[in-house]
Image 1 (cartoon, rainbow, N blue to C red):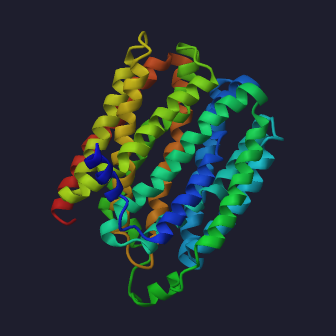
Image 2 (cartoon, one colour):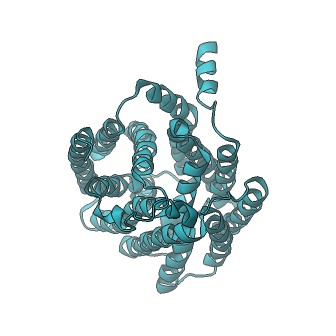
Image 3 (cartoon, helix red, strand yellow):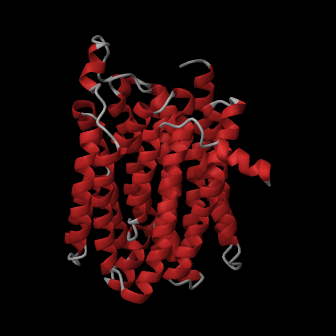
Length: 403
């Protein structure tokens, strides 16, 4: 037991103070993001929208995420990650508070679109911040620590949110979401200082660097498609899965929150030690991406049977293991590939891959559920994972040839 404890503590050593502060800010922000995991249930049960309408609203979620990632990357390359993060967090807080006053279909589509455009401009900025504040040998664990904080916050959030919904309803969650974004701003501006080197200064060192090099990088495009397919499957966890829990297994919001907490608990306890162990083994990043796709595929294949409630736990464990490999190592691949001075553009394309998945995953998934049922959706989602495995193997071969 003592050895396990020491190994766990060791996995956190060597990370910079700024990375720890970014983790704290992420924890506060995500702990307040209570409404997102229950958005499909809110739209279905409180506002009475159909699965098709909910899919369209979630598509706006993804479209906003896509344009936010693109905008955030460009602004990060121009102004630096610090200013982008400050502006994004403040305006996101205002938007979340405002969303509770909208109940029409088109109003929600526009409101979600604007909110996510602003909110996800934060994503390329924080990825660049991780690169700025971490050493190359600590980068994967730095990503892991940020993810641990985010997941810990998201574990606290849905668990409390499920209880709050049962007792008070949904509206108070929007106030909590907005207030925690603003609190995260205050913490960030107080604890983390703006770095002196600006993106424009970094680009001056590489005056002949092609600003469009990211769009000519074939291996990075393959990686981006893998991230898209991974997102197409994984994001079912927050769209179709809560409905599946509720409609097929009759779990209420509190029980759904408890089940989602299992995902977070596994990550908080095991992800950092796992990443620390794997980093010492010097395994190629692309092999981790392959394994992540394999676990993701298995996670949805097991859902094809729907008569034993225990399969939900099996599914959650497989998806969590896939997540623990998939997100840190796809992120590491992107950071390694990014050219100095153009990190914002690279990380924007990386984030946009998941944003595209946010557009299509809920729309396709919920439409399939509406017309053909949950089981057909799980088979289609399994197919995303299989295609991801094939592409990840191709990427691995290209990486071995330094292409």
